[in-house]
Image 1: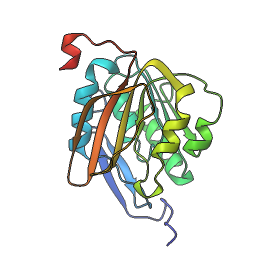
Image 2 (image 1 turned 90 degrees about the vertical axis):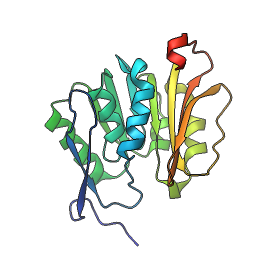
Image 3 (image 1 turned 180 degrees about the vertical axis):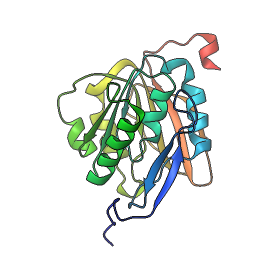
Image 4 (image 1 turned 45 degrees about the horizontal axis):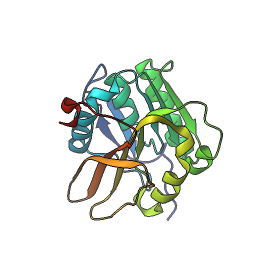
Length: 201
């Protein structure tokens, strides 16, 4: 069944949990495949990422509501690129960015993630969020095209259906993982990263 456009679909909300935009609500239209990360999952993820967010360049490849990318900037990331294929969602992301006055920090790109990755990178990301529509099975294809867009010490967050095993390309080390009844989530670091004892906590 064809998904209704965001303009006509019922709208829910997700909130930014922490940082300068704490408790700001972001609209969540009823669009096929759109499934924002829960508050619980995002709180856990950003607790893990706190030591790495300051000044980071963030790439959110399936931005949807913008909850991951905007949360990162709210908590101290310097810049975020939000890639979203759906035209209505991209328009809504731009409206959210304008409402936050974040145009200087957040770029919204309407594009298919795989096509965008195939282009020459305009910058290198320190932190990448990959939370695609689960039904599309895009993890392997995205991971294969990600390399040129990554900083040498990049971090990678993946979200997938509970119980699904993802195989990462060589050079990635699991840092932390967790799950709920519906989803599994994990944070990886490039093998070149050296952590101090307190960062391993």
